[in-house]
Image (cartoon, rainbow, N blue to C red):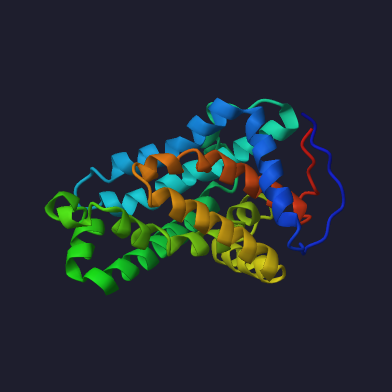
Length: 246
């Protein structure tokens, strides 16, 4: 595989969404099992941290994001070197931007989770807060259904997509966390139709899988594809050049 860098613009027409999705699949195909397992690591860490009493839920919304940033950095390095390292999730701490990345995780994780929590709290009241925020899921078996999962997860998808380019600004443009979030949103507002289409695709895929039995497990294969797509989007918008996977 060769990464060919070309000039690009800062905006994207709707037709580029198909390019992002297809090139993301091609990039994932280069490291199929390894990228899948590395992308799964943040979710495993999130599940483990939620077992910690009291502070577990809060920690689970921050530190898994740092692993995700590391996976993306590893993917960027792999495009240049041809090798995706197993140590990618932890290599973030070898870079000078590690503290800015931590600041971004402290902002983005609680923000997305807070919006998700507000949505279910508005519908179900205190029991939803007790189950999700305080971690007492076993005490509320009435929430063990696909409807509740959809209402909890889906509101966070557009927000997560809106902030999807923020890690790249932190890692590759030396931007402060809050400014990186602003620049991510600004970049997407320059191409509203394209990113609305991309967000719609992600929402439909996520909702479709959540509505079928074992839907949460079916979502797992989307993780490496999403990571690869963000690399393609970043390069396609001219941040590091346009990438063509061969």
